[in-house]
Length: 477
Image (cartoon, rainbow, N blue to C red; front, side, top):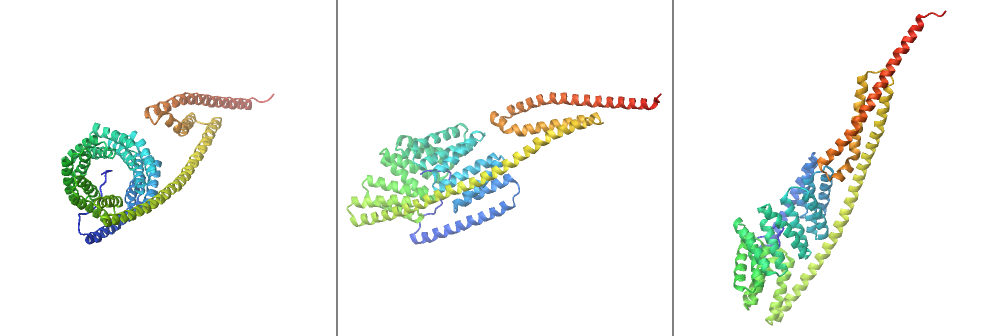
């Protein structure tokens, strides 16, 4: 019942053989279409020259690629993040961090997903974009739900909900209410889950979204069941099923039908319980929802055991064992993917650190050359002041020396100034103005001394020349 901005793609119930053929055909066509779109985006990316556009194209490419090749998507999105950081493109950084986290969720690497969502959160806390901030808080809560850390999930869901209500972000209102209802349902706090599912249903009805309506009514079916209000639970489950079938939401359809099966079993209506449990099982099998399949199979095994139908119970117990083996196998594959993704990210970070180190060495070398050039230029100005030269040339060279020195100090001090001012433009400006206020009087003083020296040299030169002329006119006795 949990929702993070996405809903399952599925189709309505058909006969089993026709459905299986159609389902795999759909997956094949969908996969081919996604790969074709990814190939097209790669070609566009190769031709793109503007860095910010490259970041956007890489993010777009990674968001598609993660559906069929998560490891490749991680590599692309990391490159996108590196480029965005290099050009200081904050929106690109935020988007890249989000797609990396989403890809880690796809793999099942929840700790790494949290790591990148928290990085995204730090960025969004410094920006004035309440929608993005609420979204990342909600996604952090969702990851904690996947990890079954419900108290932490509630903390972030409530922070997100507070922003959504304060800033009136209507597009996220339903998701927030539904997610809060879901967590309270998992915690078996039925009164709270009922409140939030009811609010979510009201929003869903206002929007006219039948999938949202079905999801909220499924939640209310659970809440009423746990509150032992079976008539209202029955109404909500039955209504939810009709909406979910119309919306082609097979994932939640499995949940709603199994919820109804549990309710009918509680009411001792065993035929109805069996019917809806088998319906849940059939849909789960068709859509390859292993966990939903396992839940329905366990229910049927216990159901037949209660009815003393040993053959049927044993048959479903065997099927449960097969599903457990399959899930364990998938878990091992997922663990392998988690390790592979961690290693891939490590290798990408090593390459990025090498590039950063090379860039840092290049900048240090440039600063060193500038540092050598400035005193050399100043000394050259002093030497030139000793020879016959126009005062305006000395002033021009002096101004050039001052500009070079100020720009050099700005480059040299920028990281330190940025760090102590926390990127506050007013404070940065005050510091640089203070530096200029110190340099300008020093420059004027040095310039004045140089001009005095130049004038003195000129006067001395004129006096020497006059003396020489006088001696030439005054014959020796």
